[in-house]
Length: 149
Image (tube, rainbow, N blue to C red):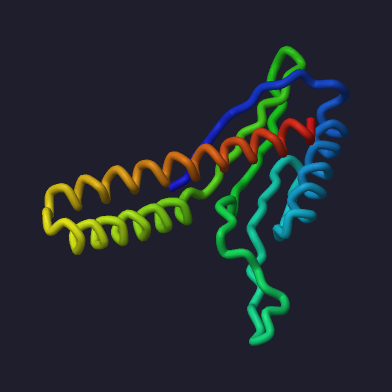
């Protein structure tokens, strides 16, 4: 499952040089944040790099990063505007929300022994964690895109 958003903003220069400038800034921000990036002319892809952990804890990667992978596409449209479309994968949020919800439901069922209330707790926990993760991703993407314009 992916989240998609479209942003329109004014073109400050010719499209080729301005889009190249935006993509270079995006590449800088994502690479500094530990992502593997690839870019074409008007398309930018990012994916989080996973590091293996040694027995001493060196080279550890943070497994709790919510923003994992996505695509950013730039298009020139009429009236001197740029259309930026981005897609972000929500698979990790869904997996983590579901795992936490199942654990919360099982813990509640062990404590309370009421299956309907445990199912309700699981559903509410899933939507709560999903909403929080979704808002974090949305805020992070808007922040990065705002800095790259």
